[in-house]
Image (cartoon, rainbow, N blue to C red):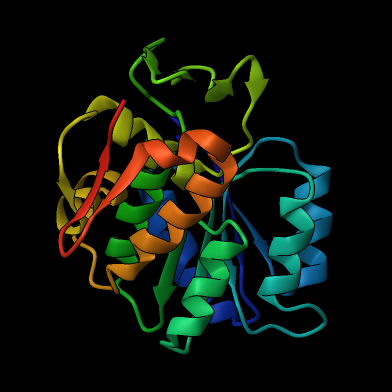
Length: 225
């Protein structure tokens, strides 16, 4: 049984084959693109793509450009691959709405695990029609919807999961480590400041309600309502 359709975008055919083999072994259907232009053609021609694995450095159009184009039309989960472990690149990726960021070389098994974790967080096999209402924020997990005063708030998948976690644990001080373990859903080896970047963006999108997310200095965050 197919789990979902994954678009793998990398100019190295050997890398595409490696990733494809591991994903197919786990039951995923895989489409391949060798450059950014081909990736966009495939993406807009196929409405059933569940997730994109996107290399940063490619000919014709790099991964950043592809990501910007796609984010103009879709919130499909995106995992970025890069040969450079540069914090600025990582932060740029998250600012563009990237869901995960993996540096090469990487373990294909870990990549598959992260693909499955992202798909779980983005509603595949989620936890039904759970509704959360806290401090005037309405969150519907099944519909992947957030509303404030009847107006829809446009959040990325990671921002949505972060807000849901805060709402589920309202009034509780949450360390950055605990947030990483629960929202990112795997052992994260990057910089915990990734959380600060997401919280800053989430607060901005929530407007006045963003003030409900309080900073616990030296520890993490707490949603107070």
